[in-house]
Amino acid sequence: MPKELTGGTPLSRFKQKIQRLPGALRILTEGDSWFAFPLPSRPNIPDNLIATFAEKAAWLRLEGNGDEAVEILKGEQRNRLRRLLADDALGFEALLFSGGGNDIVGEDLLPLLKDFVPGADWRSCIDQERFLRRMDQIEAAYEELVDLRDDHRPGCVIFTHAYDLAIPTGKAIKLPGLKVGPWMQPYLSQRGIDDPAMQRQIIRYMLEQFGELMSKLEKRHHGIVYVRTQGTLDDTQWGDELHPTAAGFTQLAKLFATALIARFPGRL
Image 1: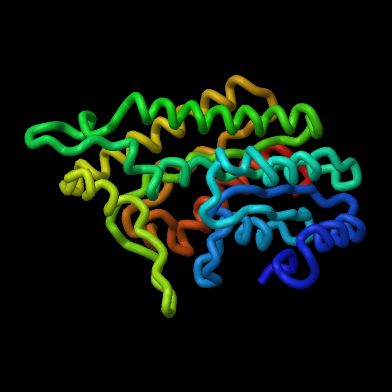
Image 2: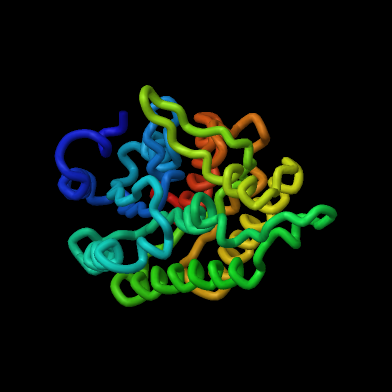
């Protein structure tokens, strides 16, 4: 297990590392289960990056399973992020952010759907007004993230992504005495949307729209890198309905590693 995940508090471990290695790239991570996935058998994206860059980077990790972008950028989570970015002693140079997926799937998916009507196509099963409003909420959260960066650590580069095109298979995470998920198929079925191809197209459309939003934010603001992860995983590289296998996480982490190296040449 990476040293950043053991012993002391996350902040104390970070401070110890930058004191020991003042030239290490200072990276803050925040977000959801693509960064916080808890099974050691399926190391998540930051787990892979920490192993890859070892002594070349120092990490402070804030992410949590189930976190939504809208929730992260308000209340105490927002205030914590603001305090950390404003701390000159910490001096974060990169912020890796994974957020927005949970704002669309799970119980949040059901209100975005309409009941299936025989003969209808997949587009008619999406409540476009509600979906666009949800995307506006996610966009506002990202704009707040950019504002925090601009106000308190303008030199910090934000790295985002748009997940990959998840497949509503109904497969959950099964642990001893615990089942987590599924996050998509049951809610589609509640609306009478039972055709697998139609289910998949609806989710693909929503995630591709999220990807368009990330691309727009990258063009709109300086210091944002949109890591293009969509289209990376094949059907065999999903460990459950929403999260990659170990090999899938490794592939995605390589895309982040390439983006970090390109932005910080000679540092990693």
